[in-house]
Length: 376
Length: 204
Image 1 (spheres, rainbow over the protein chains, first blue to last red):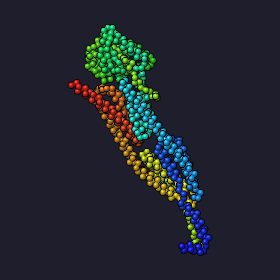
Image 2: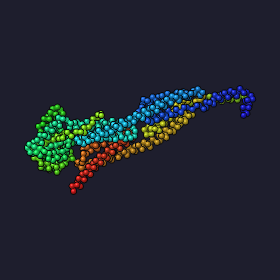
Image 3: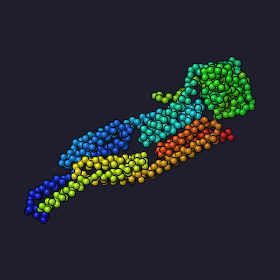
Image 4: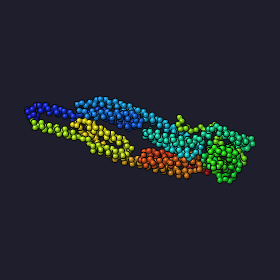
């Protein structure tokens, strides 16, 4: 009080000057608040990142970030202005616009994510279906090694993709499904050529002819005939041209292919005869067939000439119908349960015609041809 | 009065000088930046992504505040808020960083446990397969099952690689998938064995 009293008395001009100076300085202590949109836009930026906008709307998100950065730079410039001249209104308006953009991007991200989820789920289900089909095919045609290895890897990838999907990582799931698709393709490359033989009309006609010849002979001569249907895994005894009894069988480890050379594990296809009955064999009893016959020899030489069979490869032989059990896999022979072999052995005399074919019932056979990769 | 005016002018001058001397808090910036970098290097982005991103964003905000002060008139420059923000960033980064090892360890533990379980399941499937009946009953097939186990065994090194790369989440998923498939193979063999036992029982 003393000061004011003193000043007032001595020089009122000084008081006015001081007041003016204080009025310049004091407002600087309380700047106007920043627009609330600043915080909102920054939070939106974080929300967009969290929603994986950088993955699902990368261009739009980049544009959002650039715009926001420009506005923030302008905000900084605005903040640097003398307090009386600061005007945050235009910046607030721009921030409102960028927030609207952000909301739009967020919506777009959700839509795209949902589309990706639906698409990936559908893809996963398609691949699972194909896998199941191929699994069945591989079991049917006894292709147990390479194709199965690829199939199990595909199954693992599909399982992993499911776990990624559960976590909402659709990109990760999609990448796993791409890998699964590759493994499925690899197994198809092994399985399909084998399987395609069973839809080859020429081949089916030939098989039909061999079966007809064998059963016709049985009918005409009143004797027995044997028909082995590889895909059905059965052996039928015909008596006087009529089916008498059918047994389950096992075939070679590569049994559904036609035998081309020694050691290929394939069971030969053709029109054969029982040329020897072995009462004692390593596999209980056995009926030795006349493999290779003339047609097999011709085919072998033709393929060798074409370079499709290695020069040093032999034809193989000693193809039998024997006991030992139908479940074990042979090197190309046809195997039966011991008790069945005992029966067959009794029913079949020397010289009995034997037709070994891919399938004896082609009409209701291949309905499980696997879908190829990329097919819709 | 003249004396008073003189003091006031000196006071103003001191204020001007002090305000003009306000400098960027370089040490604080470096410390905060280093703390964030250390957090990222420790695996913050992988194991605690959201918190790491928040810390990173807060660092950007602090740097923006510094920019804002830099462009102000010398008299009104004030880095106190920026300093506070930087100190907070540093503290947060250090706090999040301390959480990383436990999260990482937990993920690693899960992956290793998964790997162990997957290996045990494959081992069990192989052991069962060696005791399996020659046939497998129904349509399952010994050769097919062997192929399946081989495929699963092929996947174990991939699992190891993922663990070595510290990709524990993916490794855990893979381990889960391997275990599930291996258990599936074991179940098929067990079913086949049951069938054979059933048949043998019937014969008696």
